[in-house]
Image (cartoon, rainbow, N blue to C red; front, side, top):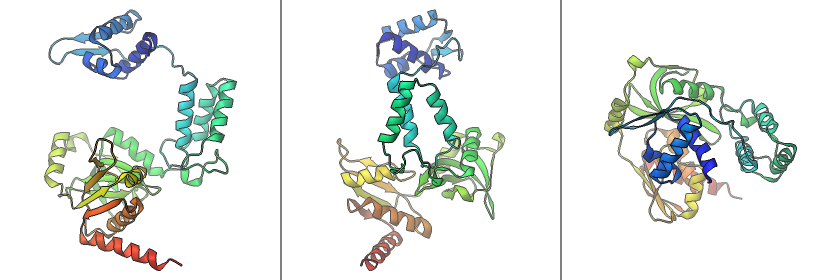
Length: 319
């Protein structure tokens, strides 16, 4: 990256942060201390006002959105945006209800030659969720549940919510919102029962953020979760083939632990409630999807029986 491009990128980097340090700048852009200082001096000469503080917690702050250069995309950046946008089609993502409007705006900033290139790319590239007969076709499943966007926007205010379901109202802290088998789910910590639970987003009728004076602090939440978290009761070993399948449909909350530097083997340790028959059945189906490269080392007997039942059923249905 040349100096001009680096300075423009640094200006956007620091404008997007309320506070930053010289060390963060050096690590982010892989530059020396003296180069970082010179770049900051150049940025101040361009008219971006920076304030600095000294001491152990010292650093820099910037007055937001002052004299930033206009956003411009080169050919490769425009293609990257367009291809990324195509890759999200038919995946039930939130905030993309007006996808056609967004596409037109993206095309509007492109020149005629760039537009031709983008349309050719759309015809050429077939993603996992693309209709190969018509790469521009949006399936009905592209539309996310109506509650998903509401839930996300509410979480931006406060992740501790009061959620109304069909028959009850619960108070939860939202850890993750994730997609599985074309469905959206919430991984939530029940603030009354002190345990994690999964909620199917279309079942949610209403969400309301808890008042801040009634909300737990981050440290209180972490302590509660740590004290109540059950011990893992499932261990799975993975080879390379099953790792690739895991990456297509990962576990919603637990990451893989790689066992070698080249990431050819791994293991997964997690917990499942043996009394939750729905979760047991879903986990058994997911485990079989991972293939024979995923070896179940230890698991509750309920899960083992569910896997056996699924295998027996599939064998009995063979011609």
